[in-house]
Image (cartoon, rainbow, N blue to C red; front, side, top):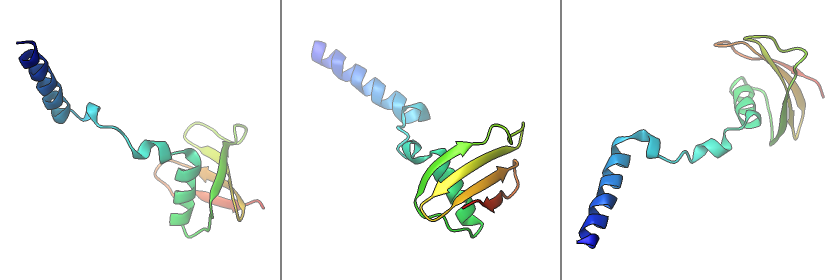
Length: 94
């Protein structure tokens, strides 16, 4: 009887996870860091960024709905200004 009950609980858990997306494990979430997202965005705009090393938000230049980041790649350092739903403005610093 206890084996049947354990099996029915396990089956119930499996079915409930298959019906809800909350049980899915986000595998790619570990790769979605600001440096990787910013590097992908400027690459899509035709700018080279080989191996992004770090991304720091420039608090002094950022405003609501306007984020400014300093992205350091292996080949260069960029200042990236981002407005929602627009292409990023990219300035090469070094």
